[in-house]
Image (tube, rainbow, N blue to C red):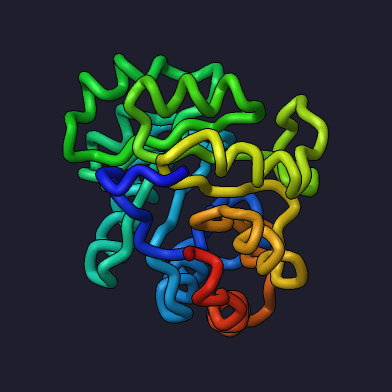
Amino acid sequence: MRNKKTRPLPSPLYAIFDPSLAGGRPPSAILRQFLDGGVRIIQMRAKEMAAKDCLHLAREARELCHAAGCLFIVNDRVDIALAVGAGGVHLGQEDLPLYIARNLMGRDKIIGISTHDLAQAREAEQGGADYIGFGPIFGTTTKDTGYSARGLAMLKEIRQAVGIPIVAIGGINEANVAQVWHAGADSAAIISDLMGAEDVAGKVRRTLSLYPSSASS
């Protein structure tokens, strides 16, 4: 089930940039490698960073993304997203309600909502989310979601139930990403497999090369 009026995501790869996983490398260097590899959606997730430092990094990331034609999304922080002119914000189930975020962000900004079951997915779509994050698909070691792995079968069920784009998340890597696309995800969110790569740009290129044209049909 796909709504032709929905706004499509610009890439089948949704890179999540978490400076706490930089492994001592300069965060800006990893961002540049993301972009050099061809990433066109980046979400910055900096839950452990002080607001001032988060603002500084988000401003730099937004400038880099804008220059590369990449959609820049801020996790959780509507205030930071607005302050730096981000393309959108991603909210969890316990974050600011969608309708309030929409009133603050405006209609031209993208708002994504994390979902973990069919009811949450439908609620997000009905509430006006531009896309949903759904998972954890295979489980995750980078975030305690409180939910068990949802699996590909449930992802297929969600694909049939909602018409807005789906970003699958949780335990996705180069080895299993094609399964996620085939199951109906419009984009696959990858964190540790990208952040932990020695050659980040090369990892991005290899992952994108796995995208089958038939996955979106």
